[in-house]
Length: 319
Image 1 (cartoon, rainbow, N blue to C red):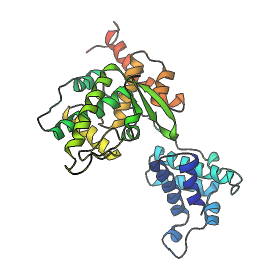
Image 2: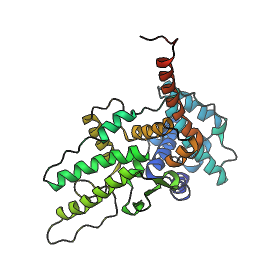
Image 3: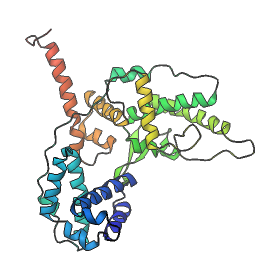
Image 4: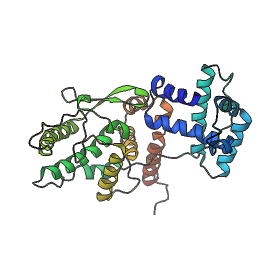
């Protein structure tokens, strides 16, 4: 089946994550549901490879875009679906199943520009510099130290949620003060670690070893795992775990704004730009494939400049 072959292509050739593969294949299935609603509800009449090829034409795809917008899908979601379909069509062109990619001729819905939300340096530093609540219980102390380090790492390095989740012990080099990241598309990059973060990582690793010994039965050897962050039961953390930690920690810290891992990434990038880092350097640290993705942070910086200008200018309206 062509769709199964496409999934393998995304996994093996493009090296996309399982989450991205699922997003692309779900978009293709959603499109086929629009074109062949009766076939997808009748198991005796499955959508064939030829049905897929026939469905991928300009008129039907244009109708699908109108259908999505009529059902109040926002333009960004529609464009993500179109990107998935375009990747599928490009793959089929390579396989000589299609002669051209019809998605390239589709006029894409215009998206509203969204400025990335971020925390101010003062607000996030106040949280990071606050004392960690600990007690005599190793498990509780480990949990508190781990949760604080998750927030610190995300803000001090700009890692993506998935990158922090998949972090291995072997990725950390405290002697060189660097961390090796495998990012989107399996691209590798090195991110420098500041001294204070190296110190916190060292403290965490010491406690991590003690914590692992306390959760093992006396008659069993200590669990050996290369996962950097562990759950309360000693297993590798997962994506939703990161979400919960970030939301809980930042809510307790009374920070205003969206409490997500990506907000911390935005905060890191905005802080770098405001402190004078050039866009190319920020691009490399964040692991962006193009400078266009990094330039969005200049809007945040410009908004700050306007605020300072309006406050300091002698002829500005001050209340």
